[in-house]
Image (cartoon, rainbow, N blue to C red; front, side):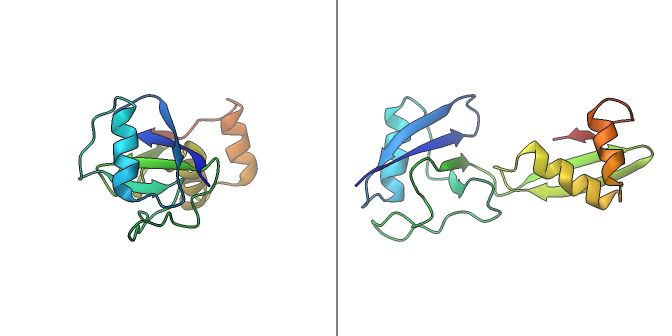
Length: 134
């Protein structure tokens, strides 16, 4: 039985939709992405959604967490350095390639010790917003 998954590839602005068979290997994932017209090499690392660590792929059995509709990320880096500025303060943190903006913002709210209503006001444009530099 195959599962349809969506793969975001570093350097490309669209998702690649692929069907992975039960006996898929990492080589099959790479070949499927290449067949979609995207050039990648063995240096690309595969992540599941927002996971901090890459997928450990052993042999020809798809990891059980990769289910129908899963989002995967192929990236050359293990972490992305993010700098957040708020007022006169600056914080740095490293996130996995699949981290979404909401996760970065939640981290910043916690580390700048912002009250939840202050964060909501910033989102509504009523207060000075957080600025992230990737």
